[in-house]
Length: 111
Image 1: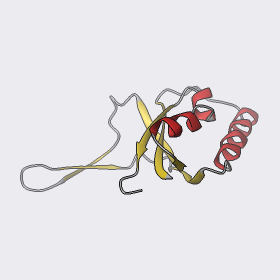
Image 2: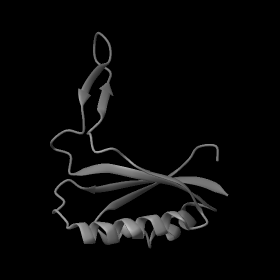
Image 3: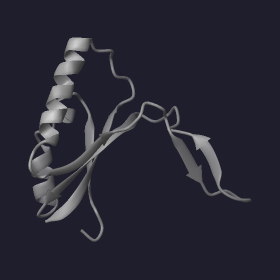
C-alpha cells in the first residue's frame, strides 16, 4: 500500500456555526479518522503561518496566506491506498466535503 496525503482546505468566508453544530462536525471528523486506512491526521493552528520565497539578496518571509487566497489549508490526513483511484474513493465520504471544503489528494513520494 502507498501513502497519500489529504490536504483539507476550507472556504475563507465560513459562516459562523453554533457550538452544537461544531460538536457534531467534530464527531464526524474524528469518526472518519478512525477508519482502518487512516494513519495520521492533524488540524492546523488558527494562525496564518509564514510564507518564505526566494528574492534577490536572500529569502523573504511574509505572513501568509495572502488576502486574495480563497481557501485556507486547515489540516491533513495521511491514508493508505493501492493507487490514486483507491485514495480518491476512500476520500469521497469525508465530512469535510459535506461542509463545503476541498480535499487535495497527493501521493507521498517513495511510499
